[in-house]
Image (cartoon, rainbow, N blue to C red):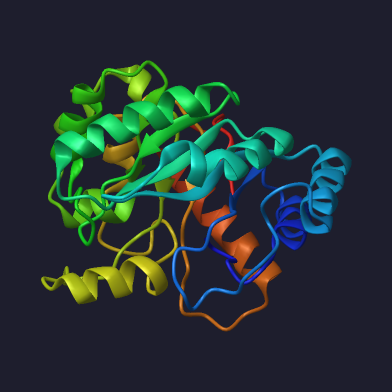
Length: 266
């Protein structure tokens, strides 16, 4: 997300040059404003991505965005993205809850988790204040209800902070639910409207350590899992410059949390 303008092959090259351990790949667009890319199946783009992964030694931490809506047909909608994830060696998938019926959402999440496990991928439900799963408590309730083995909760630092979640809330989660974590920093004062929360979440995050979020306490409350840097700052520098700045910032924060040996993903 830090250099979202790059396609998958370019992202791998940029991350390798900057010194990252891995990457997260957006195989399904999150918004209509994002470019359409041929990222499902063994397209030339995906084949080139795999070659660059092999050449650089980077791994794919996660793929996104798998949205669970009221009319979602899990196997029909997500078969191609999960096959692509498996081809690229991804171990995690980012899932959002866009269904107000949490019982149905839990059923679909359970089906997705079982289906994804066939591809070696774990499904991770990320609470966001502008979706139907607004905070950690709602995400935990849904994950608990779905009773699937291969499912987790994805903690994003910005949403964690904006929903007034605490380190104690994080520490209370089963450790096996936490497969990776996303970090950035946020502006102060904290926004109160959903529109502003959405805007900051998508385009106005800060680099780790540059805002009001207590990232050290957050990380210390979580297991030592891979860290994804999610920081689309409003800074018109080249992608490589932004990627290196984000990595330096993340290393400082992660080091302060005594978790300096975790893998860092662009």
